[in-house]
Amino acid sequence: MDRYSEAQRPLYEVKANLFKGLSHPLRVRILEVLSAAEEVPVADLLADTGLEASHLSQHLAVLRRHHLVSSTRRGSLVYYRLTHPEIAELLRVSRRLLGEVLRSTQEQLSSTVDLPALPGDGAAS
Image (tube, rainbow, N blue to C red; front, side, top):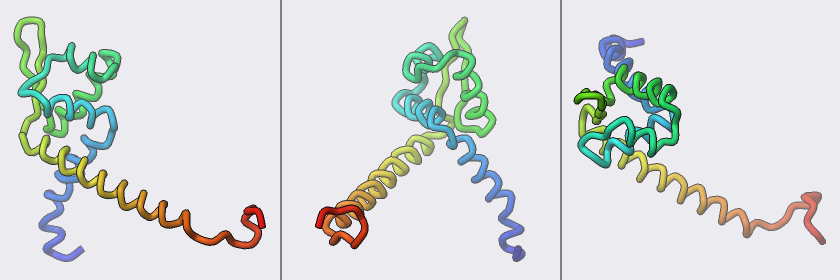
């Protein structure tokens, strides 16, 4: 590894940890729910995700560990929020990117429909 890359290693590790926090579909869903409001009570997260409380708690712990969410307790209720508004923007950008990838893939698949059949592919002669 060259000196520049070695000097940047801590930054790469932080970035990798960010993506570890995003690496589960239910955590992405939790972040999307949180991105739609300033803060969300745990009861609403349970309803929106359909998770059992223990599973939601595990996912929230991962998100907290990776500094993607924070929480506040008010009385007996716990509220969660995104730690940075850029997380919501990251989710929007990734959704747009995924849409583009899917459109491109669909176009590629559609173009193969017009290919001539090859001998032995099981098509009627």
